Image (cartoon, rainbow, N blue to C red):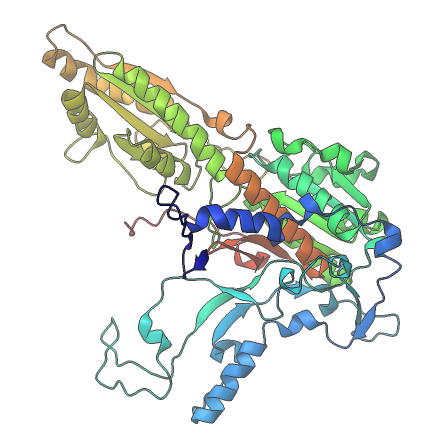
Length: 555
């Protein structure tokens, strides 16, 4: 007998020796296997032949594309609520709505028909033509995801409340008319209607910047989703980053056979580079090659470049969708729960920490120092150190530190060595840059092709400083005259040139598919990412030139 409760599905058995219950994880996995979650369509759907998809896609013409309504309905409901309660107020609906839904640009915003009318053709999604595809697979018109899970309970108070005696945290009287003002983002996923005829689509994908676990999986899944779910047959890979747009003859046609095993390969099959961005030349190439779907995979510099491309496309009035799948093992893209490749990098970094711990444990006064990536954000160092459960000190760019005196790391490491005969330090590559400059160890400021300042190498410098300060103190405490036994491990590039683990492979698949869904629906100038565990579409402008860092005020 199967029964359901809010968080568990369990099974009762007649035999007293049988299993009495099974938690939701097991049964739900079986159910999901047959119900096929939205993110995994390409694994089960056969390719959509051109004869099936394109001829049957009868277009419809709308004066305003349906997507533009997605961010207005909740605002209208709020306005009617305010009118009914007699609460006035000036300003736009976006300011007074129940939710501030971040709008995503749509190609219909700047494209026109030959008659100059602001209209656009729409087509039924090829998935909607499949008999076994339920309506629940398609994202509802007004579906959005709240930016915050934790809220102030008083923000939900109804307008009719009477709380004159209640004060807010800062001592001001509570205004019951405030209502919810939470930020929200458009939910990612397939739409029932799309803005492009798959028969007329030509897609290009490019990877830029540093390597990252999962790049090849993203390339694979963009190609697979375009071909299997939408029947798009012209799919190309642009080699060597942005510079590859300068010579379209080098673009690689890519089909399912070309990408079949990429999920098991590290690096990028397309290659990458830093710099080489020429906005006008890139858009000229897109127009010349009749590309109307562009997928860009990269970090902060790449996102800035994609924003320029999207703006130029809009300026020229072109029907080209620009979608970004953000990539950085540093996990430094704001708003997002995480970026792909991060979990794989943390896992690899933890293995290096375990090695350093074993080495430190094998010798008197053993000190293992592990340097990991993290230019401006120390998430890899922090997560790997906490996950290892053996690190005695974690140094990140967000927190300044000093060597000598009370509270300095030298005394702390000395105490750990005396107490445990070993210690382990994890340091992010961007940590201690100000301290090195202060002590005269900083080199000349040099930038790479992406505009990133090249960092001074904190790892060897830190090892040298610690050994110089600890050798004499430890020798006095040892009956055998032992000094510091230092083991330095630098897995920096080992954590990013490897294939993704299972969690990142899954995440890359979801991101790639949802980028395709958004682009096919006509959305542009957006990136896709997870917010509160749900994939969303985020305007590029919200994350370009911004960085996510560790919140040191939080536990």
